[in-house]
Image (cartoon, rainbow, N blue to C red; front, side, top):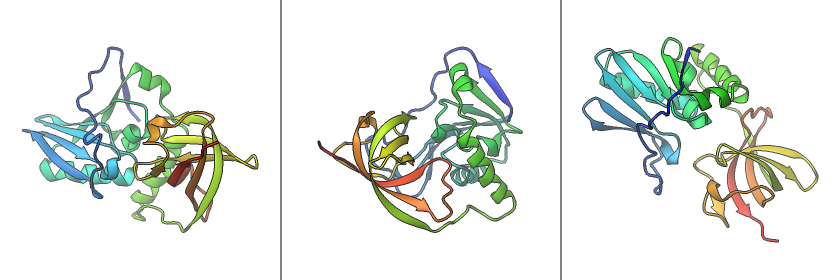
Length: 226
């Protein structure tokens, strides 16, 4: 992956859209100005931006995962035949970086210094690579049956503003969980109110093959009162 570092503060080109309202169940591509478009993720998921120039397209952030980034890519292709030349990453969170390998290479990824240092190249990129490999073979995303599980847990680690949680169950088992944009919260407003030591009842999805490199997806999360 080609990567350029910017050692000056990077001014965000856009803010998350619909921060206080749930977006639709399908991603949208909205024209903001001439040659400037916003990618609005479904169900308050990742947003992105595309700026079309005479020398190519600049994409700001890439979506949460390769299938979603394919949608962004098709939207861009619907408005221009120019290639994507640059990918600007505003944060090192998975919902900003998740689709970068679909563009870079050949596009150059531009990140600020903190992102370059903190970018998680472990679980995120290994999972992304597996998905890209399937897509290149024309197999599409892996569809695996899953079981719904319930657990009573205590939070021991919080990453990426509550999107990823490490928790311990009542019987001492460690769980890695992911709270995406479609979690039903009860007792707290959203991910921003999660805290270390908080006791929760969670309902999550466990794939039959047990393979969840980014954590088991939470569908319902309830704060348990002492």
